[in-house]
Image (cartoon, rainbow, N blue to C red; front, side):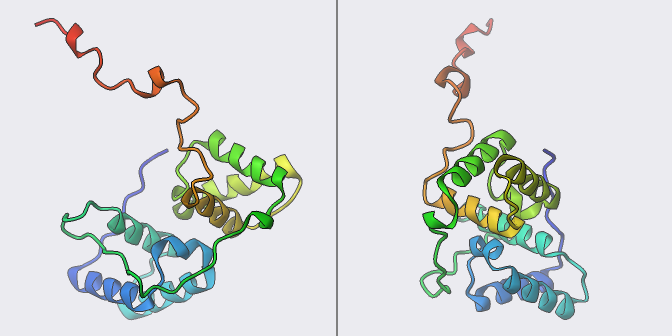
Length: 180
């Protein structure tokens, strides 16, 4: 999968986007679970800046900045305790077989759950695969939110967890084999 590049914005627009993010008090990991909020946030942003960024582009910029290491310039800090709380998706939202199918799809696609937020083609593929495996059509928003929720709850195995330790940890164990 090709690496997606963040949108470029001017310093003034960056200050505005940061202000909007903090004033909204909605953590970036909830954006995929709140499509109405995200549409309004994007519309306000585009109206205020004269830009035409998509919700996916704004989410990608925000999440990328949130994931920057602490102390790195440009990092977007967490909203903190003052964020608007949202309940997580419970186990009862899908049947056991549907959860199993969703977990299988996650492993088959081998893509981190956050990538579904930024990639419309990946979401379409997720919905299609879920329909093929379960015979049930679910919205892409719901399925992405379910995946992210499961990951945050520790219910999804990390990608690559099925690999043997020898394969996963290739590192520099053979560095001593390099001729001097």
